[in-house]
Image (tube, rainbow, N blue to C red; front, side, top):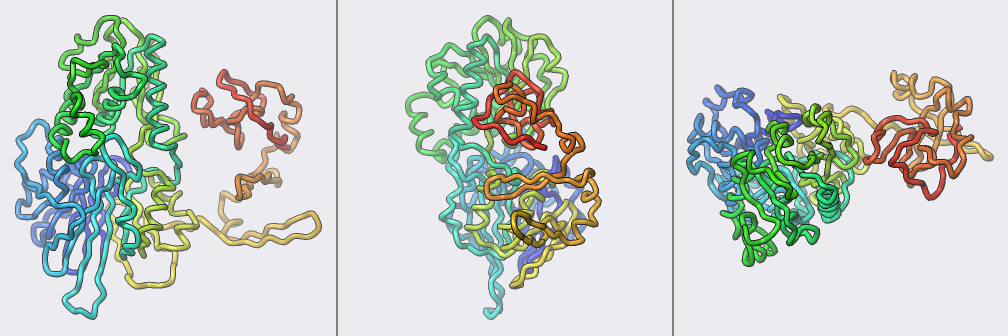
Length: 540
C-alpha cells in the first residue's frame, strides 16, 4: 500500500511536509512547515518515522528539520552532500550539529529490508534532489511499490546548477509521482532570455542615473544574480558597486564551501577570480555591514534579504532608486512588496522574472517522461495546480490528485481504468457539434447549463467565437458589444488599445503598461502602445 499524509503541501506559507507510507515503512518527505505543531507529535513518539528525506535547503522544505531532530534524535535524516552543507543557513543564530547524513548521487541505497532510494539532481538549487523510492515485499509474488518525489525542480541549466537530467528518469513508471507544480500552466521564456532581460533592465536603469535595490531570497536567486552581474558583458569592467546584506553574504560563503560540486563553468570562473569577493575586478561586490556604506555618486546595486524593511535603504545615497521585485510567473501582475515605496518621490518600483522553477510545459514533459500511474500536484497556488490538472493531456492519462494540507490520500495501485479522483473538480465536459450548410450548432450537457456561471456567460444571449491557435474559444458578449460598441469606428491608424498588439480578450497584456491585466475599452490609449501588425476584426 502507498499512502500520503499531507501535513503541508506548499499552497501558501505553510511549507512542504509529506508523510509517505510505502509498504511497511513510514517516511517523511521534507519538513518545511513553520512549526512542528502541525505534525501528530504524540503519534510520531509512539510510531516514529523510519527516516526523513530532505530534497533541498530552502526554508519552505527544511526550516523545521532541526526542531524535528531535537525532538526525535533517533530518526535518521538524509539529503545530498551539498544540501547537508547548506542546511545550517536556515538557523544562522544557532549552533547546528551535523544532524543530516549525506547520500550519493545515482547510486541506490538500501535503508532496510526491501526499501531502497536513489537520488538524482533536481536543478533549482545546488544539492536539490529527486528521490526515487522502491519497496519490495518479502513475498516475491507481490509486485514492488515505487514513488518518485521531485522536491522543487528545474530542467534548464542555471549558473550554479545543471538542469534535472531527464534521460535518467525517463521510463521509471512509478506507482506515484509527487511533483512540484508551482507555475501551473504558465509558459516562461528561455532561461538565458530571462537573464538578458534582467541585465538589460538593470543596465538601462543605471545609465538613467538610478541605484538598484533587489529584495531576494537569500539562497539561490541572489547568487544567480550576483554571478550574472559579475560575468555579463553589460557589466564587466564597469565602475558599479554591489552590496549584499548579511543573510545573502552567508549564502555566498556557503556556495564557496561547495565549489567542487558546482558546474564546471563556475569552477573555471573561480580559477581566474573570486566568485563573489574580489576588489580587483569591477563591478566590485562587498558585504554590507552598515547602511552608511551606501553613499556617493557611483552607481550602486544592493541585494537585500526579501524580508527586510526597504525604506532605510532607499533613503541612502544621492541617486534615485529602482526597486526590482522578483515575480514567480511570467505575465503575472505583482501584488506584493511594500505599498508605501512607490509613493516616495525618489523611488520607482518594477518587477523581473528569473525563475528557478519548472514552467507548465516542463512539468508536463517530466510527467510524460516518467510515466507514473498517480500524479500528486503540490507546491503552488491551488488555482494554478487546478489549471494544470485540467489539461486533457494529463487528465486522460494519469490519476491526478491536488491535495490540501491535512488531507490523506490512499493510492489504489494497479487500477487500469482512469476515473476522476475525488480531490479534483470536473473541469472538462463533452458535447456535440452539428453542421449544415454554413451554420453549426454546439450541444452542451446539462452539467454545464445548470452551473451558475452559465447564466453569466452571456446575459445578452449572444456569444463571440474566435480562434486561438488550434482551439476555438467562446465567450459571452456584453450589451455594449451587441449594440455595436466602438471598435468598428476606430480607424486602422489610430493609436488605441484596439489596434495594439497587446489587446486580447478585452484586456491589456502589456507588462510595460499601467493597464496591464485590466479590462480596457478598445478606444483607450496608454504610452506603452505598440501597433499590431494586423488589426483584429471589430468585436460586434
